[in-house]
Every structure is written in structure tokens, then in C-alpha cells.
Length: 107
Image (cartoon, rainbow, N blue to C red; front, side, top):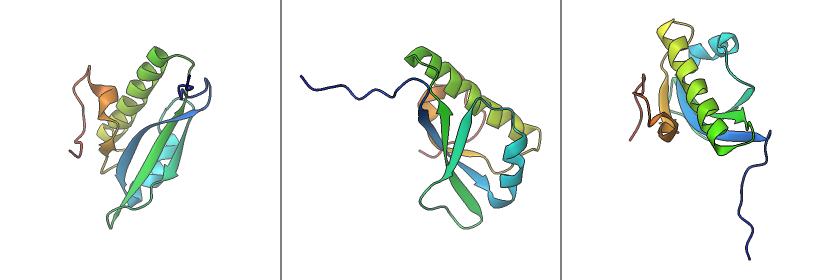
């Protein structure tokens, strides 16, 4: 029987790739987010930066879905407040299926 690949609880889990204007990077440090990491994605359009957004896996799939949704909504609130700018969701929109996405996505 093959092992099913599940992320280990409390490991970092990729939830999205986001786009920000380059000038917005400094504002990310002041956004209230769960334990997370941003890593540069391979390529970004000129003037923007694409980031892999990872959060600490809370232990269950349901808890991860809640954490991912809340983290993405926190980024959207930060853009509404002017803390960051140019926010777009490149991938990860499935975490927002139960809510209206407050920022544009790439389809």
C-alpha cells in the first residue's frame, strides 16, 4: 500500500502565491498574520513581486483551511487599510470558496 502524502502537523504549508507591488514589501511586516513565511516565487512581472505564502499547519485539514482563509483575508484587510498595495491572489483561491474574495485573482 502506498503512503498518502500529508503535511506533518506544525510544518509550513504552502497556501497561496500572492502578488504585491515591489514597494509594498516593507508593509508585510506589520500585517497581523498567523505564524508564516513568505518566499520569493520563481518569477514576477516587472514592478511586482510574487511570493509563496506559507503558514504553520495547525494539525488538521479543517484547522488548516480556517487558518489559510483567515490569513488571506488578513492580507486583504491590510490592502484596504493601505498597509500593502497591489495585492492579487495568483493561486490559492480555493481557500476562499466559502467567502467572497476581497481581491482580484488570476484565472
